[in-house]
Length: 337
Length: 251
Image (cartoon, rainbow over all chains, first blue to last red; front, top):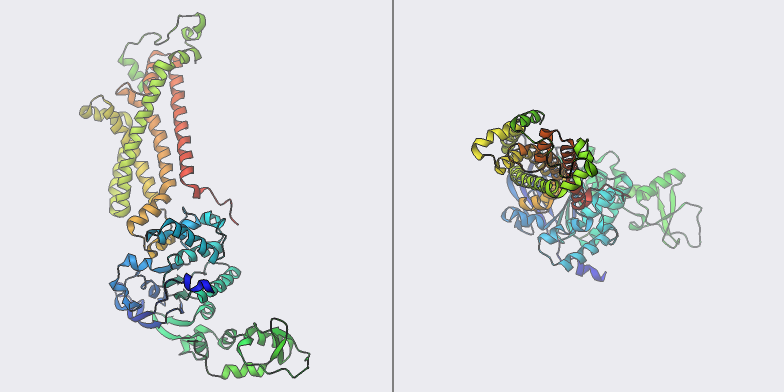
């Protein structure tokens, strides 16, 4: 991890929405109503909700693709309204659902767009492009010279991600970035993005309409309802454990307990020690399994207990149905500070 | 172009077989017999008739398309920025396009005389519609998500135009140029009606004298020029738009 400090030149920035309202002319109801949020630096905040919930509108007010009607948004204490709009946008990474790669530029030139606008030197741009292509899992020799039309949907979104990260912005806005990608590739991209984020710790605003994606990606989730009213803003675990109202409960789904179990792995909980020398005739599962999958496994195998093993296949403890049920009754865990 | 032969025939009293060169009979019997197409005549007059007229024709076309493109391009940029401008200029260029070519040349003569200016004004007028329409359509062809990404990344309007919209307009612009060049090459033959320039001149002459080789050879040259110009433009477009060659490498 020696390169980590070197790579993340810009530190993440805190984003604050203060009583932000967006109203379009013509007297229609507000798209976003009096939205106040504090997104701590380096966290992923997912804006989620049904269509008409104003989540994309709320996001686009950060880089002023949509102008704020009332209230203000602050990035590291600076009001976005006080900044030059072009400069503001160049400091913010922007990823959209249909990627929007420039069809007439190859992948490398697409990625180099903002660094070029910022007047970086040729060698620095070249180095940065190579680094980013590798970072997002593309071949810098081969894929860099390809045009978007020659890339698959998943590869295009990787290039889109690299392009958004090119000038090392402290804030990234992602508008349903994996929405148009097949489920298997989507899951891989989600995992890779989370891995990248652990390394780079940018402040991310991520818009989706998919609650499962929100739970998976978000350090915090803001659930918006019709008219851009904030229904609840909390960690995924807290929202699943205690939905603020019926709307949130319906939105997260009747299986919210199971979704909550999916947030934890067997290695995260305290297991019952295996009796010495004993090798109980129970199913053995890896400690990287989620509690949700462990529960499904027990139900499927018709047993009330599992042996949890580590990477070397050593039994590290037992997990039981009762233990899982007891966990659901326990208070929510807060985001690690 | 059809009413021209009779018109021209009435205009003068041409020699029986003009420019026929060599002696009657003998090696060039074809010319004396006024055969449909005599290679001998073509070889004999390549240097003094065909090649100079071909170059003049090329020049007439290049100037017309050059000026027409500059005008249409500027107007398309304006219409791209200011939507309201599309209808007035579009209507104006469409109106020009509907005027029969001979009538247009005739209308201009009182102002600009029997000069090359008259010809060029007419030819430019006919290129405007296609070049304006295609350039504007090309500028508007950038997909909405591409434009949104550009805006979100902090490109100014001018940068978006230069770096995104113009390159993406190239295929449509080049398609317009191809049509404009080919139609101008064809139309420029009519220009000889005003002043003896270009391939139209030997065609009219040939038609007046019933000497078939002259207008067959010249007509063939005009067609060859049009095809060659089209090929050059296609090749240029392919070199300029390498991204538009289809997804052969798609994985």
